[in-house]
Image 1 (cartoon, rainbow, N blue to C red):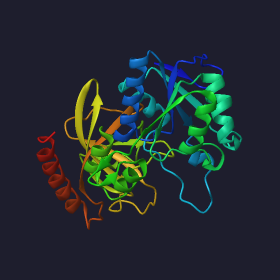
Image 2 (image 1 turned 180 degrees about the horizontal axis):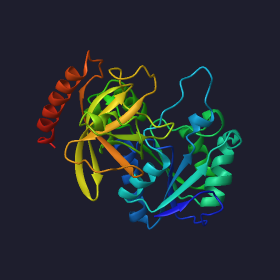
Image 3 (image 1 turned 120 degrees about the vertical axis):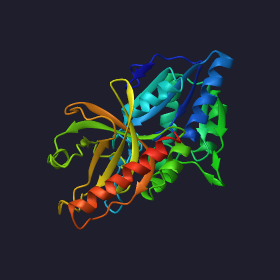
Image 4 (image 1 turned 180 degrees about the vertical axis):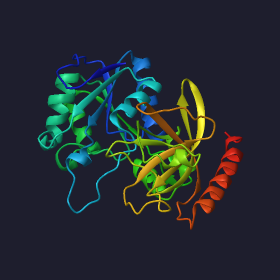
Length: 311
């Protein structure tokens, strides 16, 4: 897969079909656009280009009165998924406040048409672009007549009467609806990060955990206990992930992601793990003593084993 990190790195080629967007999550709706992009390229012998942005525009343009945006996928995770779905040419635009001032007309003419080349553009059902998100399908239609390129609009993918979208997936993460999240994504929701030292308490009570240092803007599921999976040394290992503040043992307000693997006890410090979330087990709670805590963990493990048999 060819990865370009500015407009000067990519060669001009008129015979190009492209799509533009953040593609956060690379969910089933995005996958439909990717599939159509590749179909168009194959049918017409065009170069398929996906143009995305990093950092996410909402992070750069964060408003003080709004909650900070949390990402379903980092740029590294998006690239892995793009490659998985067969894309060959990815252009990553370094998004900045200065670039955000680019008018929609300039973006299309000076960048898409003159620098990349454009025979056809694929857009989502709600595609808007350029300064103040002023560009839309109407503008593209008028410019297409001048610069001779085609437009294909991809309608929203529906799930049970609702549009599949990154926003909807974020809402489902906030309500522990991991199965719905994975269904909309078409792949398991995951969080990657380095394993870092914790307070060591888990090992002293026979429950050693891997503490995951996840990226700052990554969207973490709501506090609770989850069934998860990781690939370690080439083998799938299942575990219980706890997201929360560990109220039984601390008064901290810091959210921690830690994983207790059911059949793996080796030292993982310093390694990078990808944690795939499979199902929600229960909410985090405060126990009156260690025995109550351990009894609940035993019940969690029993439920986890039952769920594993379904995957």
